[in-house]
Image (tube, rainbow, N blue to C red; front, top):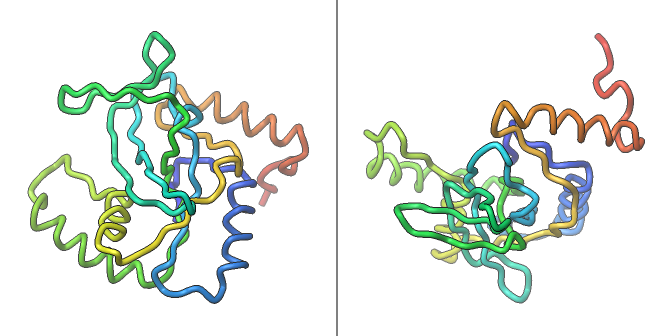
Length: 189
């Protein structure tokens, strides 16, 4: 599962495919996530929301905290200020950019969690059902395990703001010029 407005890079897809090939015989609630360094996922054009990850010594996700309003401050540190609290980040934290590998068992879990979400927030025009928050709930309930895959899988590029578009276009152009992607990127017709 991925976001439609993010460019994850070919390396991230190769990492995911390699993991899936090796995990073919695993059970129904073993999932994975491709993680990225926070410093590589912020926009200079405004704040972003990120799922900040806690990972155990074996590389499994233990928690995801959805943090809104993350931006780069004047000292170059990444910070966020939800509900008047100031969170300081170094930028080397692993975050979820919503590149997940799930099995069909997820749908039953999501149905249950979304039903709960609607009963608690159904009348809110601003409440969001975050996938990382749902996954964190499953981990706390011991209903799923999530392997965090290499953060060096590739460069993430996102179009959160309209001003991000030229940066995204330039990075993709650079990948085409380097031969990572074909030219033209999309064939005519």
